[in-house]
Image (tube, rainbow over all chains, first blue to last red; front, side):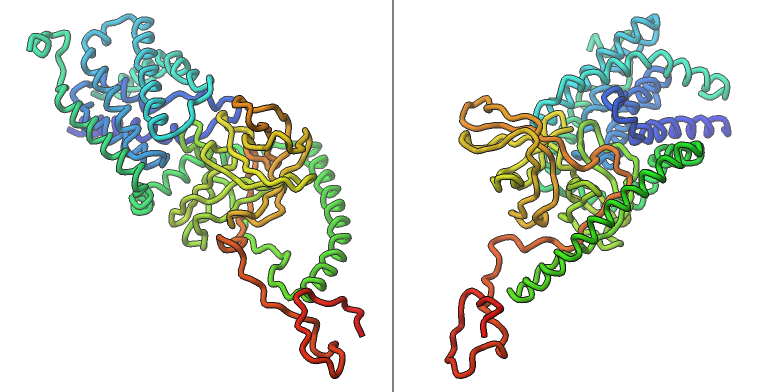
Length: 161
Length: 313
């Protein structure tokens, strides 16, 4: 019971941490390289603990992220819901992919996410973003194995579900 | 149905729910885009949001503190020396300006105008928080409780940075002049040409896309705020023209400019409190003549539209 509760707090904690990491700025030069942390963490949880992650959770987390960065309410909610839907759909395949294949799948998901974001922003009347806009998904995919192993390792050490 | 039962596609996700959530998100986006009521929600949610901002700003704050704590003596001495030289230079300039300002005040008293050169400013600190990819915004550590209002201009020591677009109880959001959605009325210092500076697409420069073909604009020209539009007081430095070329349409010249303000590096900024002038043309000035005791005795009522020279008997 206690361990279960601890597991729940750990789950929530990583999600909040992902939102905070989204807010922390990088030095100016590295700015385009910043990965989309909430997506990475949500992907990890939807692969590892699929019964906890639902579309509703993704939507709520997206709304929280929208409230935090104040761009357009519903934008990240849309992106994260779509992302989690695809991840949950192919969950049983993705889980048993070797790491390099999983990384490629994550790259595809993140690029899809960026395309969605671009469409939303263009519809909202923004100009097309510069080329460096497309770097971030690659950085996110490159970080994926490390994020995955780190979160997995921590979970094992803490013996959490 | 085959898909739902197949173990490869097992999962708790229904396409119907996905469509529901996506539709909800789209409705939210459209409503927010049309009405902009998200800020009202944000103001309400500020109790939860603002501590998170402070938390997320801690790493940057820590880096600043560390850079001061571990800066070696040598660097601090050099920095101190430089600051003292700057201060000396600024003071010398100020002293010269003081005489001019006094003269100006005097002349303006004669003209009976209200505008003064004094600035009513408030110091604010930038909270190191990233507000979304390629949104050119800053978060300041002062908000509605400190008397900040949307629309207030924000400057740093070198020039205009942007304007406040939203206030939360103890923080406020600034849109930078390099934001593609920002437009700023400027005037070219050398020629007095008035035009509009927009933020560029990649967001670290200014673009002036509508300069008449025949206009005289060169590299190195300084841009000042023109004061038109009533948001920014006139005469603040905005940028320096770096490139002039015919626009793609061939109907205008397009200039690019580098902002003078340290857009990406400023830690402390100033909020201007007096909003320059109300929008629209200024009120007509009541005609005022020279003081009554200077009027020639026995003359009727001259009521000149232009103040007469002071040396009149």
